[in-house]
Length: 336
Image 1 (tube, rainbow, N blue to C red):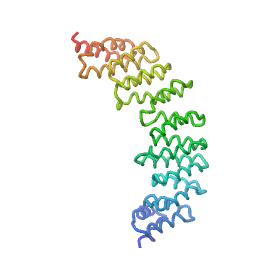
Image 2 (image 1 turned 60 degrees about the horizontal axis):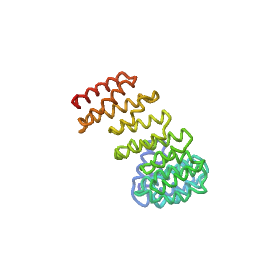
Image 3 (image 1 turned 90 degrees about the horizontal axis):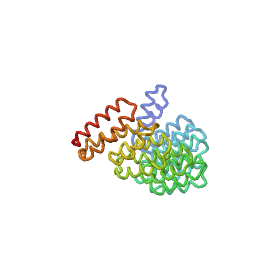
Image 4 (image 1 turned 180 degrees about the horizontal axis):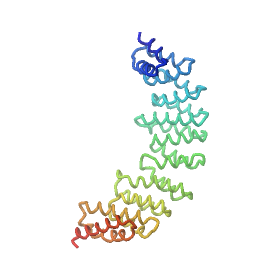
């Protein structure tokens, strides 16, 4: 009996009352309330349809998902956008094929973006999204550039070897190369790192090299990976680096690896005017951590020379003083 008055109050002139009625109808159990929401969803009045779309999602009415897909093809852009958004909230593995069909049929950039967001929302909730990669990769060939770019970005959400392979292949398509590169640079697992390094080495486009190196060195900076692996990655990247901005990325990664080997890789950059400040800061950061460690006494003597060089290289009085203070600590720990 509460359903009819709540439906009437949905369009009350007092917005607080209308909102309260919407919340109440959204929470009210029973088939009568479901039926009222379905009636709103199929109404001719736009406001009622938008309310119906909202309430289908709020009530988790999975039986009305087909009606949402129908609304996602409506002539009215606001209806389409609302329906697509709610499909992203309600959809699961079973809805992926229909969402992908919807993407293929999208007629404008706004719809493509909305459907991509819905796909990402659905994929992010699936326990093993990489199992769904074939559904996306099968749609790549023959897709329009906007749809293909959306699929490539969605593969970044999916992850896994098959998705990675497909994104790497998309680098050969000039229409989506930039999208594929950025997706690869933001990949959520380290297996993308070799692909990023290979791209950085062979591209002649400076911006592409920087994006690839940023993604690659992001993994070299990731403390979840073993320090020796990250150091090896930095050594590999060094050969592909000749621009100051790229050198700064390398020094940033090296500065997070507390080892004497890392200091050795940084040392040549202390003489490079374009990055000597970054090299000095990285040297001081590493030495400071090493002097706090269990092996401080063993490594202290080998820290003196790079710290003295950093103190001279930097134009920062504060950093120079800090380096000089660490020199004294290193000498003391070394017994000098």
